[in-house]
Length: 87
Image (cartoon, rainbow, N blue to C red; front, side, top):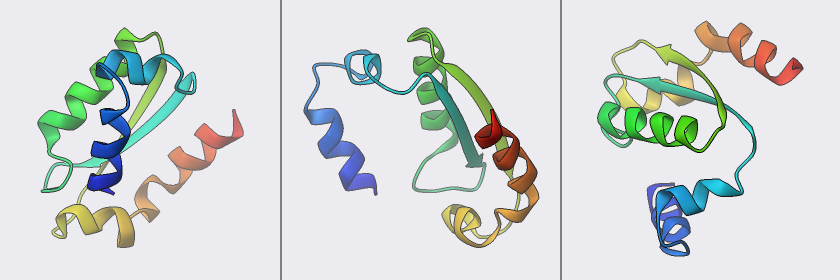
């Protein structure tokens, strides 16, 4: 996933250019203990989406598994995800 993101961004001169054609609505789900997508990077990405005029909703996961919280610990944000997809 990280490598795919890196290769994707290499196709554009900047993050702003990459986000220009991105969908208008985003739900960013993160966990503070993630060591793959660090909190600072998630905050930077979320800010870049907003700067690009995208609607951004966020949800936070808790848990001891770091990046794997997004694999095994999504149930607490399930309703947030369902509501986002229903719009």
